[in-house]
Length: 295
Image 1 (spheres, one colour):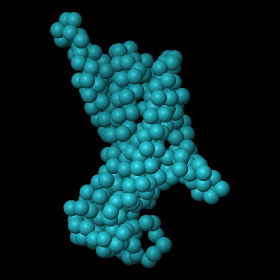
Image 2 (cartoon, rainbow, N blue to C red; image 1 turned 90 degrees about the horizontal axis):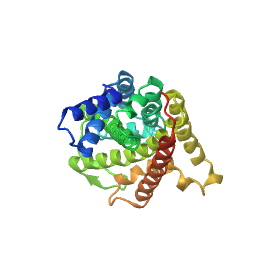
Image 3 (tube, rainbow, N blue to C red; image 1 turned 90 degrees about the vertical axis):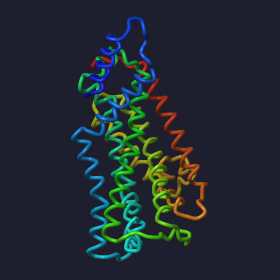
Image 4 (tube, rainbow, N blue to C red; image 1 turned 180 degrees about the vertical axis):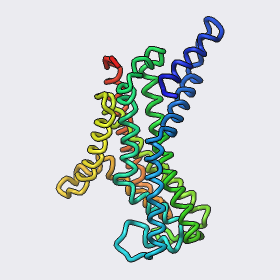
C-alpha cells in the first residue's frame, strides 16, 4: 500500500465513523507512520539495498576466516579473530563512508520526489493528510530506516562473527576488558550514534527531495553532498571548517569503545547532527509548504 492509498483509507475510515467526531490526530499520525515504514521496508528495491548492506559483514568475516588478518585493513579487522563481535564494528566502519549513506540517501531522495514522480503526491495531500504532517511522517520513517539499516549491519556482523570466531570478553580501545553483555550494549550505542548521523543526512535528502520530482536526481545530489563533506574533511587547510561538517564526527563512535566512555566528541557529533536535522527539516518544510504540487 502506498502512502497515498494509506491516506485515502484513513479518510474513508474517518467518514464511516460517528458524524461530527474529528479523528484523533495522534492515532492518524501513527497509522500513517506505520504505513510509511511498512512501505519503506517492503519495497523490492529497498530490500535489495538492505541485502547488499548485510552482505558486507558476511564478506568480511569469510575473508578473514579464509585468509586471516594481515594488517593494513579497515578498522577493527585485526581484532576479529579474538572476538567475532568485531565483525559488526568492522562492517560499520567499512560501510560508513558510502554504503550506509547511499541507502539513507535513496530513501530520503525518494520520499517526496518519488511521490511526485508517481503522481500520488497531489492525491495524498487531497485526502487531506496535511503537508506538515506528511513531512513529519516522511522524516520519522527516515529516522526509523537509518536505525534499521545500521542495526541490520551490526546484527548480521555479530551473528556471522560469533559463528565463525566465537565470542567472549572484548578488549576495548583503552585496554580494558568488558563482558559479552556489556559488549552488546556498547554495540547498540554505536548503532544509535551512527543512526543519528544518518538521520541528519536524511534531513538533507528530504530537503533536496522537495526541490525536484526526480528521485534519482535527489539521491545523487544527497550522495554528492555526503561525499563532498568527506572530501572537505581531508583537506588540512580547511581544519577550521571540519567541526561543522556532519561527517567529521561519524568515526567518533570509537569513543564508545573506551572505558570510561569519552563523551566530548560524541556530544559534539550528536549536537551537529541535531543542528543539521533541524535546519534542513525546516528548510524542507518551508519549501514544501509553498510548493505548487501539480503531480
